[in-house]
Length: 501
Ligand SMILES: *Cc1c(COP(=O)(O)O)cnc(C)c1O
Image (tube, rainbow, N blue to C red; front, side):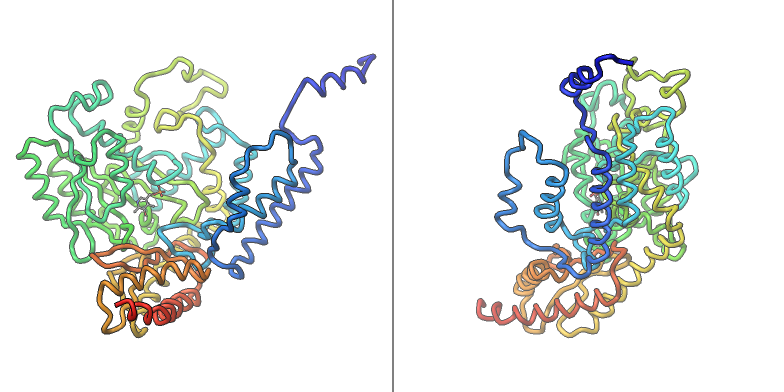
């Protein structure tokens, strides 16, 4: 067609840039290698330390300036393998039980790759990803026993889901038009109630929402670390008498320290009596309600106006994905579509048509395809497998508790109703304060020797070793290894405490 093809091709080459590979076949080879390498890495996790410290030269390499000129895909991958991959948190490992972290799955990883390849913007409109997201949210709504009127969206974390839900609580319950006049239109100070064991993402959300930390009233817990509902009622009455505006109660479905579940029915009754919003922080526990065996622990959770829960913790999905569910999803729209923008108007046909507008029911407008990894994982394994795994995690936690109870010098430091156990090395004759110091050092040694990663924390007033089991790779033998290591390291450290005293 063109008479002077060489000239045309040459000028195009210099003028028109792209980030696509020059050689697609080479990219395919590299891509296959990456998939092979990473699956092999996952297959052989058990052979490596859970965690290892980062050498200084690696930290140095990660402080270099960005390259001006290409190093190439191969070199970028080599740098990843050398400087990044070996120094991860370790939460993919079978003996990682620190804080509350999920393990992810090979299928989840592959689905992430597919989602990234498709790279849709899931803002809304007529596209498959919106249908997949709605289906996933409805699956979980039904699986946890939440009413069929409920709906919501996926977000990157439970902290975000909490912020989303509490925004709606604020807008619906404050009795003034907060969306119009802001909190400045309040004559009474709004108050939200949560137990002293509640996760600090609630305080964070309250602070971001302009309620301030003074707007969060901390309610004491009972011996099982559950919210003391009598104290809750007293606090609400007192605040009403003092002219404040109680508007929301946050109940926990699995507290971060001990996995305690609040009494949802009592809290729902109190919320109804005082016309307050009931929200559930179910970051850790909510998906446990999928199991008929565990469901009784969650009785009344379905009465909440909203629930925030993670899928990257106990559903083992790759980070980051969580769900914000609201009983009346129209309220999400009211909160997150303050003004209609003409540039986002819904079309009568084409991509901009259809019922979906995720950008208008949450904070993010441009949104990743978070739902695909969840959708494909559930299809791959089936719901029954997830239920059984969740039950296995609870049973293994009970096994660990039983092992600790029968091991000399170890004690169980708090009730373990779900998947979190709190353990303490406490030989006779060692003071509580010395035991605190010992247990702190045991946690550090377990990490640094690459044996296991539990975390530590203060429960009651004592330092405990905390094991949160949301791990789809742990076996019974891993808990045996943990118990033996705590015992042995404890005794190894004991003389140093004795000399210090
Ligand atoms: C982890 C956690 C959160 C926060 O969830 P992210 O997904 O980490 O933002 C909230 N509440 C509890 C009880 C948690 O364990």
